[in-house]
Image (tube, rainbow, N blue to C red; front, side, top):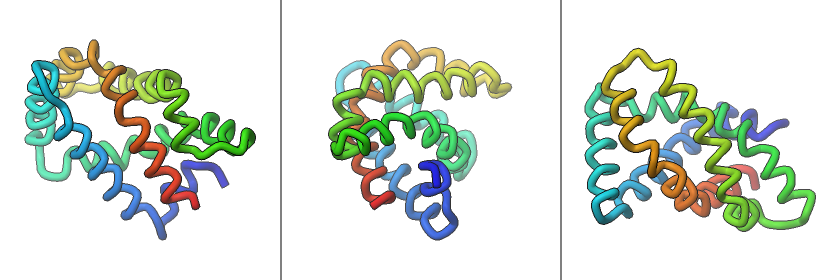
Length: 145
């Protein structure tokens, strides 16, 4: 069973989505400085599109994100390392894999607010995704153990 199948299994899916939402909220809350202000404003704008919008996006992206990080999770397993530690050591690869997916989604989006907000925040996205990798690794470990 692949990582996407494991994380989206009906017996786990709601808990995984809840943990993803918590991770996202924690990451946004942790941001500070000018880029933090921009991230918080962008998150608030996107969150205001409609109730449940971000949760729907997380639900939609989960299988693709899981497929993107699965090779790294497999590498961790092969090397006998913890998923969290290995992903953290390879945070640049993780960020590139996840951002390739969101770049494509943003490009195909017909929502002008999404495109504009993503475009403004994209230049700082990689460092922010890299910062979230330890939490992401912990989330994956919790739900695959």
